[in-house]
Length: 628
Ligand SMILES: O=C(O)c1ccc(O)c(O)c1
Ligand SMILES: [Mg+2]
Image (cartoon, rainbow, N blue to C red; front, side, top):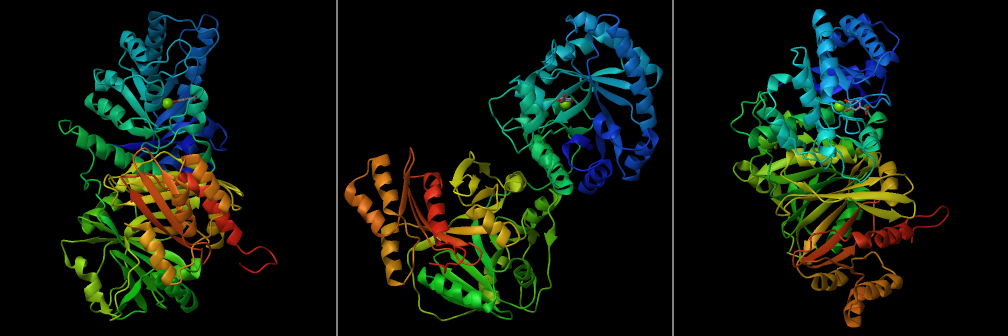
């Protein structure tokens, strides 16, 4: 199955767009007329430029306000189309999209429109060209693909077909199943876009908020299943109008687009096993089993700070690497790897970002299958030289600057801690931290969709609704991505400005990455008491917070006093309760969190986030003042 993307989807001039589209692996493009007109080269030069990139022009679009016009506008529309036919022939494409009319003079009537298309079909056929009719969700008379299909059916011309666009169908809440009964050879082209569910004017929503399949809330998979069932075997093409994408990195957006199509067609193929769909077989979405380790890159001074902090959190040094300056710190099932080695990826990462989480290890069923799926989705596999006695652990580059390693239980990989580390013989210590609850990654707001698509396309995960966290320096949008059983929980935090605590972290560490790691305890008060003995310094929460908490949730005074005594933050949802303790931040604003989930609490303490952020900001060094 061929893939295509409309040139409107991404930033840059036509040349930059083509380079990015070709590099991402697409087969073709929809040339948006605007992109052609603004480019200073002849149609045949543009056609050659596209083909030089190994791409074909799968569609020329849009042609507006064609059908249903009275004379003399009708004759004018045909003349106009003849000029565009000339252009298409010079460009080297045989298909044009006509979108349903919004012309004030356009008349209704299926037969009138069908007659216009029948005549247009004859003119197109004379030149060996084809015309596809698309129902815009806000068309004057035609705004439903079923009506567009009826026009095409009655036009009854081999050179006239239907174009379906998931946004117009799903945005109008039309049932995509109605597409299943249309003959596949009468569908000339398929455009795909997703969008977040926001109540607003259809046209505005379409022109500014579309996103890649899987990035929004529409059932693009259901739409594409119905299309696939018709036997349609033409290109599947992205047509995404999005303000951020237009100003984003052409390469990154093109890669996201290609990834979304690979994900989509894999979903469709699995859901419709009886339909022959011409896409390669790839391993299924991976079920994460947990976070196997979190690795910090540090220099010696930073490593000392981190060691002290880890000890104060109840961790112990569990092992030293057989060959490298790498330590393993452990508590419960939590493994923190501290890498100060002067060579390798961690060192390079430290040079670029300073103290940072350079690597996250995930436990999966099959590490090899995970890398295979990730690679099919456009991720870059990672390798570095393996020393004697070391294992080759499958890895990829994550979306930020870090790595993701995959550890499975079926091979020697499960024994990596025994194979590569010598026990440190330190006495067992414990503050009751048992496992990693979640990992929080911070990025610029514009990168959030890239990250969420990365996780949701590779792993069996779902997105929670986005919440806004108000930082005194601006908004931070936060979205959780979770596997069904919670074994992997990642929160994505998109900073709009560099004045927020999260934004400052990105600026100071020169890139997006893990800003905090949350450890789970099964008894927050026991943990808090243990931490008092180990010298842990919690982030101090103000009295105002506790007064409000008591009032807001109607809590018992003794209970609130207990929370306050240990700087514990608290939240409740319909199911259960949530307790949080924060560490002070270190490095460029990294911190740890300790959480307890009671009775299936499903969130992340979003109501507490503004108060936590404010407390962290109070601890930040102010100009001319020492850090408190
Ligand atoms: O917003 C528009 O006008 C427009 C144009 C062409 C399309 O294919 C489309 O889906 C929307
Ligand atoms: Mg369209």
